[in-house]
Length: 283
Image 1 (cartoon, one colour):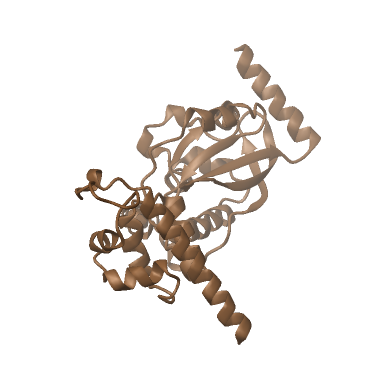
Image 2 (cartoon, helix red, strand yellow; image 1 turned 30 degrees about the vertical axis):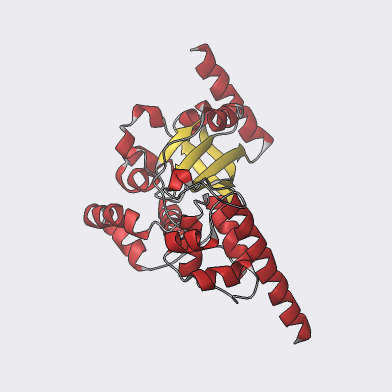
């Protein structure tokens, strides 16, 4: 019991110190408060409380490490009042509640040139960046040659589910389309919830339920699985049977994006991909 109390006090003290530090970095004049006659830099405690619409006494207690565990709503208000970044907001939640905040989905704004260069550096490994709604927003030459030429598609058709359930060429390329399609739906469901994008995918889900009885059947099964890693077996129109190991990665600082990288599963598969890419480069 004594240890738990001590840990709680230490947690409260760390949160209070962090809030105080962030408060000191704000410019009162820029936020509409008088800047004159201040003993210290930054906002006053009562000004932060005013911006967060909470009691000044309660906020003071939080900074002094004697307010107890605040609610998620209070922490969100304080994060807004202190103009915290997403990373800083997460840090406050970890300090105050021992867990990250609920995910706030933000529509993707594409990828940075640096991230595109990461994709391009993998000359013989198909790689792509997808959003939480499974729109493909970036890819490399190997992905276009081995998987799908996304650049030849209208932007609204560069979606994994639309391709899986609506493109005959993508369907024909799957070694076992039904098991792959069911896996895609189950993984997509898990990703959408994890990213807080349930409402954002509802239109796509409704559309596919109308156009594809198979999608509707898989969706109503309510299964969820993690993407992680595995082996994808393809029927490539030029190379024939092809086995590719895949791994999915989170993009740090971009919860709206994930990277999927495919590597040839065997030396023979690697040689096939190399020959395809060399042929495409010489064409």
